[in-house]
Length: 598
Image (cartoon, rainbow, N blue to C red; front, side, top):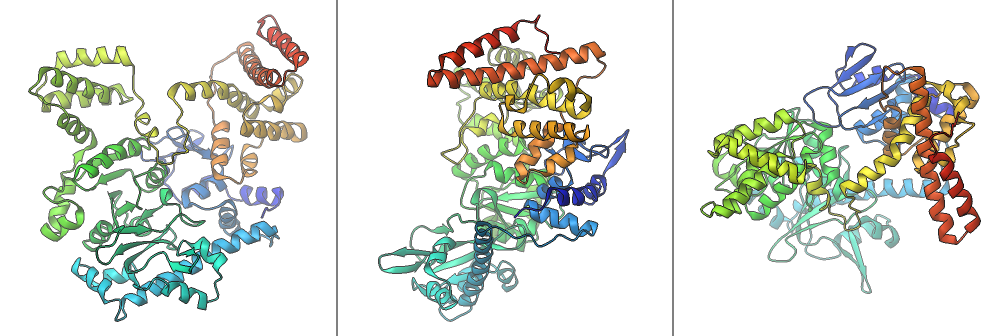
């Protein structure tokens, strides 16, 4: 389903971006821009800007940018049509009924029916818990210390011990087997349909908009697996949803308590800690961290205190910190998890543990220390070297020095000797990238890991394309020179090529580049954010006219040479010798600095 470009532009243009963003965050005007702490990642110093002239926002910290539609999509986790509807209603623009394609209608219908059947199943499980057969689950929840109010609040239920109860119930409601296969609630074999969950205490999983999207089930008895979660469906992505987030986002405490399981979240909420969330049967992912950063700037990790919990925390810390989140660790010893702790010592003592939570840095140092026998001189030296490596992950020199001072003081290490070691390690290994420590271990086995060198190579190719487009936005008069020497087809990145096509077309028709309008032409949120970043690239100031034109010419040269390299590889692969010769000649011409492009 797609509205006309003119209608999209009308909605966008009638929603001033300063007013729209101002509904969500407090903006402060400085010079000709508005500033705020970024709502998309945690930060202490404002790096998020809104430009009323270009009607674009941009964060210099997380590099997200776009127009008013992009902002609403990202902030409220909405699709393009949903965000457009929000802004259309705000501006009093009536959106016409747009006829969706048959495929779009089928997908919309499938998603709507998935929400519908999940809600129906949640009600079924909830009612089953209150039945005679459901006493086993009801007693389980009561033995875990949950009140009737808490059980109702989280919609806890029971799946009967007969393996086709829910299946028969849903069939009676008119759902066919083809659809039920898509729900994750039913499995099929040669004997027919069977409930995915049976004889389990049930935990409905809701998204940020309070829609039931999946379920978790705890077996009643000794069956395996102990906990079972819904498979991924069109409405459930376990790597992008957090249990309890629909309630935690309303807590307004400024931080989240990040747990490992359903019962930890529920016990903490019942004790008054309504800012608790947990990942769903999976380790924390980059998507989880991004979602958390939208709501809070601080996270208290309250994972299990066993070895598995410690390892999970070590993996989560750099992931969260890469999003600008400050991380602290709640010490629950001698108890294993928040649920046990609350039952044993109560909410007041747990609050004390929050108040005295350890910084993530010293938690990591203690873990490193536990791996070494400090009575052995070599292992002690290895311990100091590992600490030095960790300190080099701090990007700011002052921050690194502060932590270095704190470390040598706490562990009674000679400052001068350790500082010399730090300098030595830095010279040998160079500065560290905090995000690299978790990127290799992302959960998806199909995720391609890109080394630092590969990322730098990609950035080297894209930067000239991004800078040239930024010059064109700021100085559309350049188009007359550019169109004679370079075409959009020479932009090697697909997204950049499309932006170049649109920018060149606008210059041809109107003589200006409307960055906010072009951004709206991309319905995918990630594409919008990337386009926003393209249009917010900073250019060097204080350049003379001659220096500026020389810079533009150099950018064009780099883009054309990069395009030639791509074309050479393609021509060589198919054995087109004539094309190869032609491209080589053009490459030699462009590499000659005496060759003037305009």
